[in-house]
Image (cartoon, rainbow over all chains, first blue to last red):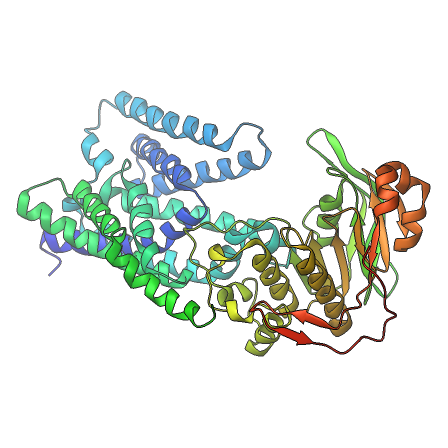
Length: 276
Length: 258
């Protein structure tokens, strides 16, 4: 069954979407979209390092992204420079350095398009295994840190004052981001990873009335985007990674339509009317 | 540190961003006591509160908390973005699960029971403050810190919230550290007032502080004439839904507003 490249692509995409949805919700809530961009651009640097040292590529990406995440975590707490400018600087520097280093590696043939925009149809059984192990681990850890992470998302000070450890949790969350980027790079490529994180999460907002609901709906929309994107890619021969992102965008646009508004505000309104 | 103190700051100071936010603060909060911090903007009130909470570490001096102290905190600012779907019910359990009965009681006491299912981002400023206080109350803390709890609340609401805070103290027998948003209104239930201006300017009972020369020089004549000590004397309260609830006159001597 895993022989078929399309089935493998589908399973890989679904694995990534399942974990990208919930993690993406936190990215949206914590306003980390730009941070995610920086990390995913850093992934290209990770690929270059991996090729240079001849180590397992996703591992190299994970290590480099974790390093960048930790660096940002430390700098952000000390630096006077605005984190917006800092992220912009690091994000594009990482991308540029990655491309330069890859340019030096004349002895390896690098599929740059595959790195930038993903190559989901070339997913191997090993990739699939890695994605699903990564996804299950990430989701388990996210469940484990859910309470303190969510409390710190609402208010870092409040969480800290009331005895949770938001700093440690935040650190774990950043490592999870690095892990998700490492496993999803093959699916949509470094330039589009952030979209896989934030578009399904943003699309789920209008359907959700509680945080947990939003995480689940985010996963579901992500999975549906993968399926729709891959099918359209198969039908119209469009590039797979970008097709998935376009499918997610369509879900987001649908979520903005008045129909959804009626659906979700009915839930809220029926409760409020009784008390007005 | 004495046995009954919940927290103790000993000559504590915080150096941050190139200057001393606050320095030389000595402060203890005992069980069942309400301590109010007042002072001009930038005088180090919030910094002092954060030292007491353990969120900030003192650069000099020491800050100690009693062992296994259960803390509740009502922060000054809490911005809930629209992208975060969070209703009051879920918010009550933010930092730890709380028995449903405690949640219901706290929401009732704060007069926001009817908002149970409302999204936080849809609440008005006053409602939001009540929900914040209800959440802190439901935790049944030993030590409660309120940073400007009555901001954005109208005058009557302000009085009701101050009453609620002293009810919390009486019921839970917790220590309360409060930052007053208004220099000129310090509730009568306060046991001690600490007037800060980068250091402890003066401290003592509300009346003693109001009469101290340090306080007068800090806030001028306006402060002198306006430090209002509110003692409650009315026999009914306005419920959030417009009903009027009659309450029995309290034992406390009737006072006056301003």
